[in-house]
Length: 154
Length: 262
Image 1 (spheres, helix red, strand yellow):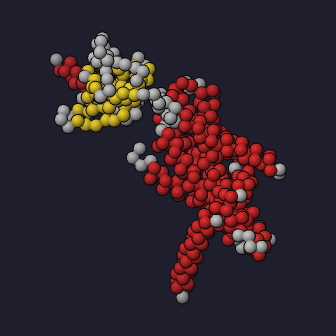
Image 2 (tube, chains in turn purple, blue):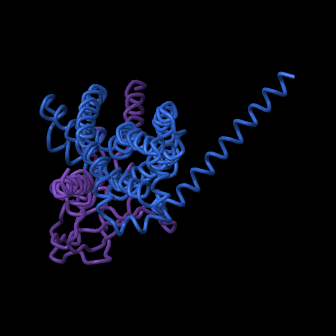
Image 3 (cartoon, one colour):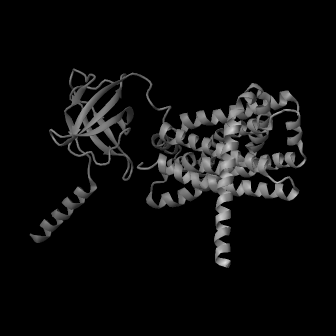
Protein backbone atom coordinates (compact mmCIF):
# COMPACT_ATOMS: atom_id res chain seq x y z
CA UNK A 1 0.00 0.00 0.00
CA UNK A 2 1.19 3.50 -0.79
CA UNK A 3 2.65 5.57 2.00
CA UNK A 4 0.11 8.38 1.65
CA UNK A 5 -2.98 6.14 1.79
CA UNK A 6 -1.47 4.41 4.80
CA UNK A 7 -0.96 7.73 6.54
CA UNK A 8 -4.48 8.78 5.65
CA UNK A 9 -6.07 5.66 7.12
CA UNK A 10 -4.01 5.77 10.29
CA UNK A 11 -4.90 9.45 10.61
CA UNK A 12 -8.59 8.60 10.26
CA UNK A 13 -8.18 5.88 12.92
CA UNK A 14 -6.45 8.15 15.42
CA UNK A 15 -8.92 11.00 14.85
CA UNK A 16 -11.86 8.61 15.29
CA UNK A 17 -10.36 7.22 18.49
CA UNK A 18 -9.66 10.61 20.02
CA UNK A 19 -13.07 11.79 18.86
CA UNK A 20 -14.68 8.85 20.66
CA UNK A 21 -12.75 9.71 23.83
CA UNK A 22 -13.79 13.36 23.66
CA UNK A 23 -17.39 12.35 23.04
CA UNK A 24 -17.26 10.00 26.02
CA UNK A 25 -15.96 12.83 28.15
CA UNK A 26 -18.44 15.47 26.97
CA UNK A 27 -21.60 13.60 26.08
CA UNK A 28 -21.45 10.61 28.43
CA UNK A 29 -19.34 11.87 31.31
CA UNK A 30 -20.06 14.97 33.31
CA UNK A 31 -17.07 16.95 32.09
CA UNK A 32 -19.32 19.05 29.88
CA UNK A 33 -21.74 19.87 32.68
CA UNK A 34 -19.13 20.93 35.19
CA UNK A 35 -19.60 24.64 35.36
CA UNK A 36 -16.42 26.22 34.21
CA UNK A 37 -17.99 29.54 35.12
CA UNK A 38 -17.26 31.22 38.42
CA UNK A 39 -18.88 29.76 41.52
CA UNK A 40 -19.45 30.86 45.09
CA UNK A 41 -19.65 28.66 48.16
CA UNK A 42 -22.48 28.54 50.64
CA UNK A 43 -23.24 26.06 53.40
CA UNK A 44 -26.35 24.79 55.15
CA UNK A 45 -27.12 22.59 58.14
CA UNK A 46 -29.61 19.76 57.86
CA UNK A 47 -31.11 17.52 60.55
CA UNK A 48 -30.98 14.56 58.20
CA UNK A 49 -29.65 14.44 54.68
CA UNK A 50 -31.08 11.03 53.81
CA UNK A 51 -29.23 9.70 50.77
CA UNK A 52 -27.70 12.96 49.56
CA UNK A 53 -24.24 12.47 48.07
CA UNK A 54 -21.40 14.78 47.08
CA UNK A 55 -21.80 16.09 43.53
CA UNK A 56 -25.59 15.91 43.82
CA UNK A 57 -27.27 18.67 41.88
CA UNK A 58 -28.75 21.83 43.34
CA UNK A 59 -31.81 23.07 41.54
CA UNK A 60 -33.99 26.08 41.78
CA UNK A 61 -37.30 25.98 39.93
CA UNK A 62 -35.93 22.83 38.29
CA UNK A 63 -32.89 24.58 36.82
CA UNK A 64 -29.44 23.27 37.72
CA UNK A 65 -27.68 26.07 39.61
CA UNK A 66 -24.86 24.25 41.39
CA UNK A 67 -23.48 21.11 42.96
CA UNK A 68 -22.92 19.73 46.46
CA UNK A 69 -19.18 19.82 47.13
CA UNK A 70 -18.92 18.27 50.57
CA UNK A 71 -20.91 16.70 53.38
CA UNK A 72 -19.57 16.54 56.94
CA UNK A 73 -21.04 15.95 60.38
CA UNK A 74 -20.72 19.03 62.55
CA UNK A 75 -19.92 17.73 66.04
CA UNK A 76 -20.95 20.99 67.77
CA UNK A 77 -24.56 20.67 66.75
CA UNK A 78 -24.68 17.04 65.54
CA UNK A 79 -26.11 18.09 62.25
CA UNK A 80 -24.98 17.46 58.72
CA UNK A 81 -23.13 20.38 57.16
CA UNK A 82 -23.55 20.51 53.40
CA UNK A 83 -21.17 22.64 51.34
CA UNK A 84 -22.54 23.81 48.01
CA UNK A 85 -20.98 25.65 45.13
CA UNK A 86 -23.45 27.78 43.20
CA UNK A 87 -23.07 29.37 39.81
CA UNK A 88 -22.02 33.02 40.08
CA UNK A 89 -24.72 33.99 37.60
CA UNK A 90 -27.47 32.98 40.01
CA UNK A 91 -27.94 35.12 43.12
CA UNK A 92 -30.27 34.04 45.89
CA UNK A 93 -31.83 36.12 48.68
CA UNK A 94 -30.55 35.61 52.23
CA UNK A 95 -33.78 33.96 53.37
CA UNK A 96 -33.67 31.26 50.71
CA UNK A 97 -35.18 27.97 51.78
CA UNK A 98 -33.08 24.83 51.08
CA UNK A 99 -34.78 21.45 51.15
CA UNK A 100 -33.63 17.97 50.18
CA UNK A 101 -35.91 16.53 47.54
CA UNK A 102 -36.05 13.32 45.54
CA UNK A 103 -36.48 13.16 41.80
CA UNK A 104 -39.15 10.56 41.28
CA UNK A 105 -40.01 7.88 43.81
CA UNK A 106 -36.67 6.06 43.65
CA UNK A 107 -34.54 8.70 41.95
CA UNK A 108 -31.48 10.42 43.28
CA UNK A 109 -31.71 13.15 45.88
CA UNK A 110 -30.98 16.79 45.21
CA UNK A 111 -31.22 20.11 46.98
CA UNK A 112 -34.02 22.42 45.95
CA UNK A 113 -33.67 26.14 46.60
CA UNK A 114 -36.82 28.22 47.11
CA UNK A 115 -35.96 31.94 47.08
CA UNK A 116 -37.40 34.18 49.78
CA UNK A 117 -38.13 37.88 49.58
CA UNK A 118 -35.03 39.40 51.21
CA UNK A 119 -33.38 42.35 49.47
CA UNK A 120 -29.85 41.17 50.28
CA UNK A 121 -28.31 38.21 48.46
CA UNK A 122 -26.13 35.35 49.66
CA UNK A 123 -22.40 35.87 49.30
CA UNK A 124 -19.40 33.55 49.24
CA UNK A 125 -18.97 31.69 52.55
CA UNK A 126 -22.40 32.54 53.93
CA UNK A 127 -24.93 30.13 55.31
CA UNK A 128 -28.46 29.23 54.36
CA UNK A 129 -30.43 29.34 57.62
CA UNK A 130 -33.73 27.84 56.61
CA UNK A 131 -33.49 24.19 55.73
CA UNK A 132 -35.72 21.19 55.50
CA UNK A 133 -34.41 17.65 55.96
CA UNK A 134 -34.80 14.78 53.60
CA UNK A 135 -37.98 12.78 53.84
CA UNK A 136 -36.99 9.36 55.15
CA UNK A 137 -39.45 6.79 53.92
CA UNK A 138 -39.12 4.58 57.03
CA UNK A 139 -40.10 7.49 59.31
CA UNK A 140 -43.16 8.20 57.21
CA UNK A 141 -44.21 4.56 57.26
CA UNK A 142 -43.71 4.22 61.03
CA UNK A 143 -45.70 7.42 61.64
CA UNK A 144 -48.45 6.09 59.44
CA UNK A 145 -48.51 2.76 61.28
CA UNK A 146 -48.60 4.43 64.71
CA UNK A 147 -51.43 6.67 63.58
CA UNK A 148 -53.36 3.65 62.39
CA UNK A 149 -52.72 1.88 65.69
CA UNK A 150 -53.94 4.93 67.64
CA UNK A 151 -57.04 5.23 65.50
CA UNK A 152 -57.96 1.58 65.85
CA UNK A 153 -57.40 1.52 69.67
CA UNK A 154 -59.91 4.34 70.17
CA UNK B 1 8.39 -44.83 41.54
CA UNK B 2 5.45 -43.23 39.67
CA UNK B 3 4.77 -40.85 42.61
CA UNK B 4 8.25 -39.35 42.40
CA UNK B 5 7.87 -39.18 38.63
CA UNK B 6 4.61 -37.20 38.94
CA UNK B 7 6.15 -34.82 41.47
CA UNK B 8 9.22 -34.25 39.38
CA UNK B 9 6.97 -33.62 36.38
CA UNK B 10 5.12 -30.96 38.37
CA UNK B 11 8.46 -29.46 39.34
CA UNK B 12 9.56 -29.47 35.72
CA UNK B 13 6.36 -27.72 34.65
CA UNK B 14 6.74 -25.10 37.40
CA UNK B 15 10.35 -24.38 36.51
CA UNK B 16 9.60 -24.01 32.82
CA UNK B 17 6.60 -21.75 33.58
CA UNK B 18 8.72 -19.46 35.74
CA UNK B 19 11.46 -19.57 33.14
CA UNK B 20 9.05 -18.49 30.42
CA UNK B 21 7.71 -15.64 32.56
CA UNK B 22 11.28 -14.51 33.16
CA UNK B 23 12.05 -14.68 29.44
CA UNK B 24 8.90 -12.71 28.65
CA UNK B 25 9.84 -10.00 31.17
CA UNK B 26 13.35 -9.76 29.75
CA UNK B 27 11.83 -9.53 26.31
CA UNK B 28 9.52 -6.74 27.51
CA UNK B 29 12.41 -4.78 29.03
CA UNK B 30 14.47 -5.21 25.85
CA UNK B 31 11.51 -3.97 23.79
CA UNK B 32 11.24 -0.85 25.95
CA UNK B 33 15.00 -0.31 25.73
CA UNK B 34 15.06 -0.42 21.94
CA UNK B 35 11.86 1.62 21.50
CA UNK B 36 13.78 4.85 21.17
CA UNK B 37 15.02 4.05 17.70
CA UNK B 38 11.55 3.00 16.55
CA UNK B 39 10.17 6.39 17.56
CA UNK B 40 12.76 7.96 15.30
CA UNK B 41 11.34 5.90 12.44
CA UNK B 42 7.67 6.72 12.87
CA UNK B 43 6.66 5.19 9.53
CA UNK B 44 7.28 1.72 11.00
CA UNK B 45 4.82 2.42 13.81
CA UNK B 46 2.34 3.99 11.38
CA UNK B 47 2.47 0.88 9.21
CA UNK B 48 1.76 -1.34 12.22
CA UNK B 49 -0.97 1.01 13.44
CA UNK B 50 -2.64 0.37 10.11
CA UNK B 51 -2.59 -3.40 10.48
CA UNK B 52 -3.50 -3.50 14.19
CA UNK B 53 -5.72 -0.45 14.56
CA UNK B 54 -7.35 0.40 11.25
CA UNK B 55 -7.97 -3.22 10.31
CA UNK B 56 -9.66 -3.85 13.69
CA UNK B 57 -11.99 -0.85 13.28
CA UNK B 58 -14.87 -2.70 11.64
CA UNK B 59 -14.98 -5.62 14.08
CA UNK B 60 -14.70 -3.28 17.08
CA UNK B 61 -17.45 -0.91 15.98
CA UNK B 62 -19.85 -3.64 14.85
CA UNK B 63 -19.26 -5.67 18.02
CA UNK B 64 -19.69 -2.55 20.17
CA UNK B 65 -22.94 -1.68 18.45
CA UNK B 66 -24.39 -5.12 19.05
CA UNK B 67 -23.17 -5.38 22.64
CA UNK B 68 -24.77 -1.99 23.34
CA UNK B 69 -28.01 -3.08 21.67
CA UNK B 70 -28.17 -6.23 23.81
CA UNK B 71 -27.41 -4.18 26.93
CA UNK B 72 -30.19 -1.78 26.03
CA UNK B 73 -32.69 -4.58 25.47
CA UNK B 74 -31.81 -6.60 28.56
CA UNK B 75 -31.39 -3.52 30.73
CA UNK B 76 -34.81 -2.27 29.71
CA UNK B 77 -36.38 -5.65 30.50
CA UNK B 78 -35.03 -5.53 34.05
CA UNK B 79 -35.37 -1.81 34.75
CA UNK B 80 -38.97 -1.50 33.58
CA UNK B 81 -40.03 -3.95 36.30
CA UNK B 82 -39.05 -1.30 38.82
CA UNK B 83 -40.40 1.55 36.77
CA UNK B 84 -36.96 3.09 36.37
CA UNK B 85 -36.36 2.63 32.67
CA UNK B 86 -35.06 6.21 32.59
CA UNK B 87 -31.89 4.84 34.24
CA UNK B 88 -31.21 2.78 31.11
CA UNK B 89 -28.60 5.27 29.91
CA UNK B 90 -26.73 5.01 33.21
CA UNK B 91 -26.68 1.23 33.05
CA UNK B 92 -25.52 1.05 29.45
CA UNK B 93 -22.88 3.76 29.85
CA UNK B 94 -21.39 2.55 33.14
CA UNK B 95 -21.35 -1.07 32.00
CA UNK B 96 -19.58 -0.17 28.78
CA UNK B 97 -17.17 2.48 30.00
CA UNK B 98 -16.03 0.62 33.10
CA UNK B 99 -15.98 -3.01 32.04
CA UNK B 100 -17.31 -4.14 28.70
CA UNK B 101 -15.55 -1.55 26.58
CA UNK B 102 -11.99 -2.26 27.70
CA UNK B 103 -12.48 -6.01 28.22
CA UNK B 104 -14.40 -7.00 25.11
CA UNK B 105 -12.34 -4.68 22.91
CA UNK B 106 -9.17 -6.26 24.34
CA UNK B 107 -10.50 -9.79 23.76
CA UNK B 108 -11.34 -8.92 20.16
CA UNK B 109 -8.00 -7.20 19.77
CA UNK B 110 -6.18 -10.29 21.10
CA UNK B 111 -7.88 -12.58 18.62
CA UNK B 112 -7.87 -10.15 15.69
CA UNK B 113 -4.49 -8.42 15.97
CA UNK B 114 -2.57 -10.44 18.57
CA UNK B 115 -2.86 -13.72 16.71
CA UNK B 116 -1.79 -12.02 13.47
CA UNK B 117 1.28 -10.56 15.18
CA UNK B 118 2.31 -13.94 16.58
CA UNK B 119 1.83 -15.71 13.27
CA UNK B 120 3.75 -13.04 11.38
CA UNK B 121 6.74 -13.00 13.70
CA UNK B 122 6.69 -16.78 14.10
CA UNK B 123 6.77 -17.20 10.33
CA UNK B 124 9.56 -14.63 10.04
CA UNK B 125 11.52 -16.74 12.49
CA UNK B 126 10.67 -20.00 10.72
CA UNK B 127 11.83 -18.58 7.37
CA UNK B 128 14.98 -17.28 9.08
CA UNK B 129 14.27 -13.65 8.28
CA UNK B 130 15.11 -12.77 11.88
CA UNK B 131 18.47 -14.55 11.69
CA UNK B 132 19.14 -12.75 8.42
CA UNK B 133 18.51 -9.42 10.11
CA UNK B 134 20.89 -10.30 12.90
CA UNK B 135 23.48 -11.21 10.24
CA UNK B 136 23.07 -7.72 8.78
CA UNK B 137 23.58 -6.23 12.26
CA UNK B 138 19.97 -5.03 12.34
CA UNK B 139 18.48 -5.51 15.76
CA UNK B 140 15.24 -7.47 15.17
CA UNK B 141 13.74 -6.23 18.43
CA UNK B 142 14.21 -2.61 17.43
CA UNK B 143 13.16 -3.20 13.82
CA UNK B 144 10.26 -5.67 14.18
CA UNK B 145 9.11 -5.96 17.78
CA UNK B 146 9.18 -2.42 19.17
CA UNK B 147 7.05 -0.78 16.42
CA UNK B 148 4.41 -3.50 16.79
CA UNK B 149 4.46 -3.09 20.56
CA UNK B 150 3.87 0.65 20.41
CA UNK B 151 1.22 0.28 17.72
CA UNK B 152 -0.67 -2.11 20.00
CA UNK B 153 -0.30 0.10 23.07
CA UNK B 154 -1.48 3.19 21.17
CA UNK B 155 -4.38 1.59 19.33
CA UNK B 156 -5.91 -0.33 22.25
CA UNK B 157 -7.29 2.66 24.27
CA UNK B 158 -8.57 4.24 21.06
CA UNK B 159 -10.32 1.03 20.05
CA UNK B 160 -11.83 0.63 23.53
CA UNK B 161 -13.15 4.21 23.42
CA UNK B 162 -14.69 3.56 20.01
CA UNK B 163 -16.21 0.33 21.29
CA UNK B 164 -17.81 2.14 24.23
CA UNK B 165 -19.10 4.94 22.04
CA UNK B 166 -20.53 2.51 19.49
CA UNK B 167 -22.11 0.54 22.33
CA UNK B 168 -23.74 3.61 23.83
CA UNK B 169 -25.19 4.46 20.44
CA UNK B 170 -26.40 0.86 20.14
CA UNK B 171 -28.10 1.17 23.51
CA UNK B 172 -29.52 4.54 22.49
CA UNK B 173 -30.87 3.06 19.28
CA UNK B 174 -32.64 0.18 21.00
CA UNK B 175 -33.69 2.06 24.14
CA UNK B 176 -34.72 5.44 22.79
CA UNK B 177 -35.45 4.94 19.10
CA UNK B 178 -37.02 1.49 19.22
CA UNK B 179 -38.55 1.11 22.68
CA UNK B 180 -39.21 4.76 23.39
CA UNK B 181 -37.37 5.54 26.63
CA UNK B 182 -37.31 9.30 27.14
CA UNK B 183 -34.33 10.73 25.30
CA UNK B 184 -33.69 13.55 27.76
CA UNK B 185 -33.52 11.33 30.81
CA UNK B 186 -31.42 8.78 28.93
CA UNK B 187 -28.64 11.31 28.36
CA UNK B 188 -29.03 13.50 31.42
CA UNK B 189 -29.07 10.66 33.95
CA UNK B 190 -26.07 9.18 32.15
CA UNK B 191 -24.19 12.46 32.45
CA UNK B 192 -25.12 12.80 36.10
CA UNK B 193 -23.91 9.30 36.93
CA UNK B 194 -20.78 8.87 34.83
CA UNK B 195 -17.78 10.64 36.27
CA UNK B 196 -14.95 11.60 33.95
CA UNK B 197 -12.08 10.74 36.26
CA UNK B 198 -13.66 7.85 38.17
CA UNK B 199 -15.23 6.00 35.27
CA UNK B 200 -13.88 7.13 31.92
CA UNK B 201 -10.23 7.61 32.88
CA UNK B 202 -10.16 4.32 34.77
CA UNK B 203 -11.57 2.62 31.67
CA UNK B 204 -8.82 4.19 29.57
CA UNK B 205 -6.17 3.05 32.06
CA UNK B 206 -7.62 -0.45 31.94
CA UNK B 207 -7.50 -0.60 28.15
CA UNK B 208 -3.95 0.74 28.19
CA UNK B 209 -2.88 -2.06 30.56
CA UNK B 210 -4.70 -4.66 28.45
CA UNK B 211 -3.08 -3.32 25.28
CA UNK B 212 0.38 -3.64 26.83
CA UNK B 213 -0.25 -7.16 28.11
CA UNK B 214 -1.83 -8.47 24.91
CA UNK B 215 0.89 -7.11 22.62
CA UNK B 216 3.70 -8.33 24.87
CA UNK B 217 2.19 -11.83 25.01
CA UNK B 218 1.58 -11.89 21.25
CA UNK B 219 5.06 -10.66 20.38
CA UNK B 220 6.80 -12.92 22.85
CA UNK B 221 4.92 -16.01 21.71
CA UNK B 222 5.82 -15.20 18.11
CA UNK B 223 9.45 -14.50 18.89
CA UNK B 224 9.71 -17.63 21.04
CA UNK B 225 7.83 -19.97 18.68
CA UNK B 226 9.61 -23.12 17.48
CA UNK B 227 10.52 -22.44 13.85
CA UNK B 228 8.18 -25.03 12.39
CA UNK B 229 4.66 -24.92 10.96
CA UNK B 230 3.39 -26.73 14.03
CA UNK B 231 5.28 -24.41 16.35
CA UNK B 232 3.79 -21.29 14.77
CA UNK B 233 0.25 -22.65 14.94
CA UNK B 234 0.75 -23.64 18.59
CA UNK B 235 2.15 -20.22 19.43
CA UNK B 236 -0.83 -18.50 17.78
CA UNK B 237 -3.25 -20.60 19.83
CA UNK B 238 -1.31 -19.88 23.02
CA UNK B 239 -1.40 -16.16 22.30
CA UNK B 240 -5.19 -16.09 22.13
CA UNK B 241 -5.68 -18.36 25.16
CA UNK B 242 -3.06 -16.75 27.40
CA UNK B 243 -3.95 -13.18 26.57
CA UNK B 244 -7.69 -13.77 26.98
CA UNK B 245 -7.13 -15.31 30.40
CA UNK B 246 -4.70 -12.55 31.34
CA UNK B 247 -7.24 -9.88 30.31
CA UNK B 248 -10.02 -11.39 32.40
CA UNK B 249 -7.85 -11.94 35.48
CA UNK B 250 -6.24 -8.51 35.28
CA UNK B 251 -9.67 -6.97 34.83
CA UNK B 252 -10.76 -8.40 38.15
CA UNK B 253 -7.63 -7.11 39.87
CA UNK B 254 -7.93 -3.65 38.31
CA UNK B 255 -11.64 -3.42 39.11
CA UNK B 256 -10.94 -4.37 42.71
CA UNK B 257 -8.33 -1.63 42.96
CA UNK B 258 -10.22 1.08 41.06
CA UNK B 259 -13.85 0.71 42.03
CA UNK B 260 -13.68 -0.72 45.52
CA UNK B 261 -16.01 1.18 47.81
CA UNK B 262 -17.91 2.97 45.07
